Structures are given as C-alpha cells and as structure tokens.
Picture (cartoon, rainbow, N blue to C red):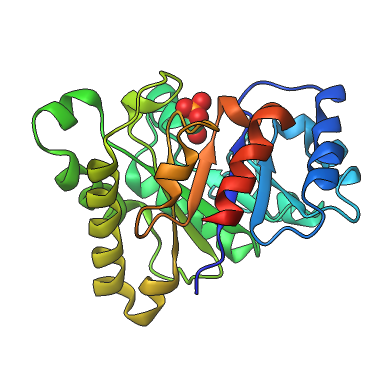
Length: 248
Ligand code: PGA
C-alpha cells in the first residue's frame, strides 16, 4: 500500500500570516489518513515548522544544493533543511529547470543529496507542449525519469511528480487517459529499475490540480496524490483537495 500524499508548492508566494492556513488544515483534518506537505519559500521554513506542532502537516523546501556545504551563495544545503525539522524537498521543478538550466544529472545529484540528509526528494519531471503535441511525451518522461532519479532511491526517500509544463498554472490539464498513460509508464520503468521497491514509490500528478478536478485525477491508477501550486495557497482550496485524496 502506498500512503497518499498531498504536497503544496507555494513557489515564491506566501508570508508569515499566510502560514495560519496550517492551523486551519489542522482543524479540518485532525485524523488525516494521507500525508500532507507544504513547501513554502525558504525564509518561511522555520516559521512554518513552528506552526506544525500537533498538526498532520509536514514541511518541505522547494530546492536544495547537491553539495553538503560550501561556497554557494544563495543556495540551501539539504542537511540544514533536515536539521531544522523539514522532511521533504522538491527538486527539478520545471520552473527551475527552465530558469536555471538544471539538467537531469543535476536534479539527480540534488535528489541524492536530499536523500543522504534524510529528506524525501520530490523529483519533478514533465514534457513541454511541443513535446506533447509531437507525440513524444512518454519518451521524454522516460528519459527524465531515468536521468533524474538517483540509483540509491527507495520508497521511503523518493516521490516522483509528473507535471506537464503546459499544465502548470494554466488551468489546463491532460486528459485522464493521458495522465493514466504517463503514470503507468513511470510505474513500469520504476519497477524495471528498482524491482518490488518500484511498486511502492509514490507518483504524484501536478499541474492545475483544483478542488473540482481532484476527484477524477485521484481515481486514476498509479496516481498516489498531487503536487499542487496555486490551489495550495489557501486552506479553502487545499483542504478539499486533501479531502478528495483521503476519500479516493
Ligand atoms: P499549479 O502548479 O498547481 O499552480 O498548476 C503546480 C506546480 O507547479 O507544482
């Protein structure tokens, strides 16, 4: 059984007062049967953690460096993310791949650093609109999956998020068949590579997940939860998504 996961990616949004949503989620989901992770911007991680006592909400970062420490101005070390009590880190989000030219190999190195620090790496992959329209989505996903996931990965240390670039922040999503096809392919490839462990690795869908499409997405095979951007910014939107996942 794979424990389901609702992960919220705040990106470069949020504020200290906005963290009050953790209290609201706590009230709405006191006995939460799924994992819930919020990934606020780095300066808010400590504040966020102060809000999680007695809460089902876990806290994650949005990126980390591949090295443990050193002369990397502005970067964040995975061991430090772990030291403050965060449990997850997103790596390889398409916005970072696009803005900073992060390659699959760099993403794999970051994921390995996160895992070595005791964090769960949420590794993001996803095709562009051109690649989807050219019929290359599954090939692209396979290549990114092979290149972005470190060999030491285990179900306890790895989550994969399929996020079609063209669905992020656009209100567009693939068809349910398209999502199911990608997730089936990811599952097959992870099983080929990791054996039984590949069956237990969690696969999230991300890209315009909202309260009104969550039920359909969570009903799909091999969708173990979601990575949610815009709809994770308020309890009003994120809470129904957690409920949909809990009931799926
Ligand atoms: P979105 O973002 O839910 O706002 O589309 C998802 C993501 O980028 O993780």
